[in-house]
Image (cartoon, rainbow, N blue to C red; front, side, top):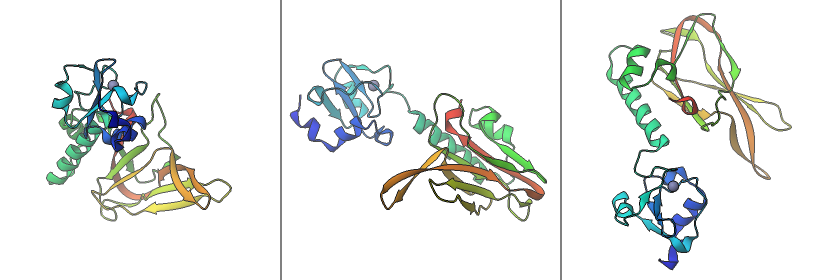
Length: 224
Ligand SMILES: [Zn+2]
């Protein structure tokens, strides 16, 4: 086995179980006879037994078996979610009128509970975090489907940061129709004078004064 695996920058990404590296390369482990994607949750192999492959075809050509834990032949959850967002955004862009949620959900093969939120006059959404289930994907997306000042008034998207030993900071994110905001579900890293620390993040929607406001919300850890 190539002795240089431990020195290859890709090895550090395997050790870090870097999901962003998925799809960029694969690796095989001679001692177990399996091949994996970089983010595989299995115990890290000895790099002396590891061979890196630029393509999935090259990993398969080893004759090894695909790992059952990381399913290197399949599409990853990240890739699947990215594909669904791209598909939903394309549908919204291409349709003359705001697509109905049910149609949108059907078109991307998800239940309507995968998306959406509608707020009407007098409604607001208390500051909260969408934390449920066993696993939490750290980022979520909200796409505004309605046009501010035309379809509704009020209803701003608000983010509150709770910082240790400091006052909370609030930010109103100005969104137009079709804009997407990607934000942390729970914590966000912030660089301080003494290194990185994490702040607790909550999000919500201020009171709708008139009209109705539609949002497409995607919470990945709830995705089915
Ligand atoms: Zn694996």
